[in-house]
Length: 509
Image 1 (cartoon, rainbow, N blue to C red):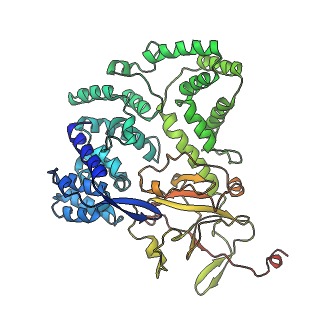
Image 2 (image 1 turned 30 degrees about the vertical axis):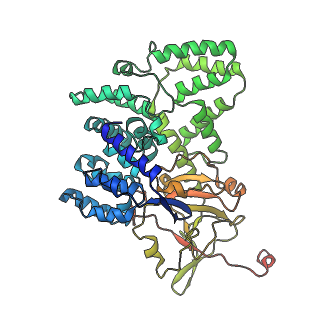
Image 3 (image 1 turned 60 degrees about the vertical axis):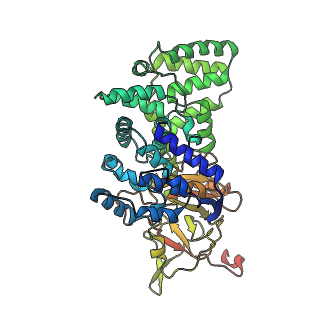
């Protein structure tokens, strides 16, 4: 951390340790607010930094007072107004420094970035040289995947710091010496090649820690005579002698897929591809999953040794960062697509018109993605216009918590008024999945929601049959990420009405 970052960290630590706080309820989650912070605000000359401290401690009344002293140029002010149009709570989270034109390459996803104060601080606190490197990595990402949040989050954990020094995200700076050397090169007009950017992306998105202390080793990363390769060869000899099956699994997974055994096990636990329809789009992803699954679950050391020997003799081990970045995202998309093809749609369905409203009968065999409006909002009241309520400029909590229901399982969060149904979710929009309530609300404020480990992805029938507790939970991105959205937010496709029958047996006669 540089001197400015260390100062910010000290101030925030002092507030946490020495200032009394109050609690308030945010959709069932207790949040803290520190009000007696005037002396800490006075330690900063920059109004944007004063505002950041007030935001960080939840003192939004002070944010509004400080904003009166903020000076924005026309470019910054117009960008602020554009973001504000979709987010009434923008002032609670935006780091006003990110409106600077030098961050304009992030405009495509700035509405997502400005809801997370940690992510913004990581970006605006970077030096100009580090920002140039980050921009190259970011622009490379855009060519590979259409949902970038998890990977941007991972990259920033490697190359920049969250403001509070003790934050867990600051524990992943494995390549600081290398990055400082790269900064110096960039400051002296060095242009990183595409290959060097790809290598840097690999290091910054892999959970494997490599030995790359300088730029020379960086340029030869993955070659035979590097420190990592020599150590690996010796460890492999030891593993063969000791019949260390876990090391052998790791050796195969790291070289073939760029992931360690822990990550591979986590993926196999989260995803169950049984019953998922194989398509041209997901075939390679599902085949890769099956190969990883077989390696993770193999118990015969000799079989694994044969797999390893065949792999290194027929294929050149290539630490390809694209496998890490794209794979799990494509798995989520495969499950989302499989679910989307099965849910209830009104297209071409017969309906009865009642008081100008089209009413469809879902029949006795259906599946629906639904959300119960206001289920966990104690202050919720009936709305005079639900379309306006749904589309109001509230996006700070960007996770839309839904459940999968079916004719054999109607479990969902307790409806307080209306139930909304979705039949046209874009495949990119599925962020989390669980066969029970996975308590996603605290994470719904984060830029990246996909990091939770207590998840279950399975086909629709299995999800309904394995639902535990009160209901299952599917969390979708609240913004409409489809290619040509009608509204900023993803709007429901229908309203669900569940009719009670006095004699249910008559219904099935």
